[in-house]
Amino acid sequence: MQKKHCAFCDQIVRITADGEYDQYIDCSCSPGGSYGLLRDSYESILALSFQQKRDMLHLISGYIREKTDCGEKVILAFSDLEDIVNAPGIPVTAEDKGDRLLQYLHRHSSGSGEPVVIHPLSRSYNLTYSPNLQELVYIIDRLQNENLLVREGMNFSLTPMGWEEASAIAGGRVLQQCLVLLPDDEKLQAEWQDKLWAKIEQFGYFPRLLASKNEAANSLVPVADSKLVIADLTGQSSEVYLAAGYALGLNIPVIWTVRSDEADTLRIHLQEIRPLVWETAEELMVLLQQELLK
Image (cartoon, rainbow, N blue to C red):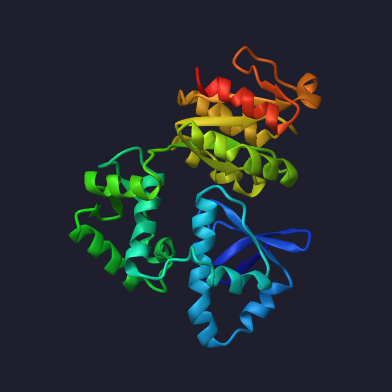
């Protein structure tokens, strides 16, 4: 098993090769997940000056964590870093950074008062794009003083006022967690995210992608936190079957789907598995809409 320092959080983590990229697995930038970095970019990042690293790397770590926590696949090259750091969406003020923490708690809970564990806190200051733990603690104290969150050890929960504030930031809607299980197929993943994510959100769910085989060991954790699971059997991934079966065991609703060219070749035919058979993303959008309206 190969291990390497993450260039952004400096944690020693397991990596796997994926063509010209390395996948960094379960570091502080993407707990329970992974991100890709062009292999040739690693030395270029290490060659940055001390001041450049101090100004940039914590922001990239925050970007990776937020994106992967939202179910987006992150693949980076050295040439991407400056654009990310200078993007208008990167929080700068303490207020904007506090909003990021409220949004994180909002994504991981179903209402005010529901605790969310942040552990270890010492490696979680990228939740607020902060350069160090001291700034994160300052932001937490400020939000507590404003009666927006409550902290009890490693448990954090939004107050009713904090939940209302976080909901307003999210556009005034309370979205329930929806885990989308897909095979390790980049083209299929991109098709779902580009054409189906907005439709799932439209019906009150916050979609999170679980696709990489590298996340298999951690796949049951986000399943238990979900209110709905959508499992696509295209490619007949064993990880998809495992995670969806676990959801059924927890009485979490599962919507099964499969691309039409593989519908007749499914290995498992059970009464509980009656997949929506689709040919195009547009057709699947209609089928999902009908299912979510039931």
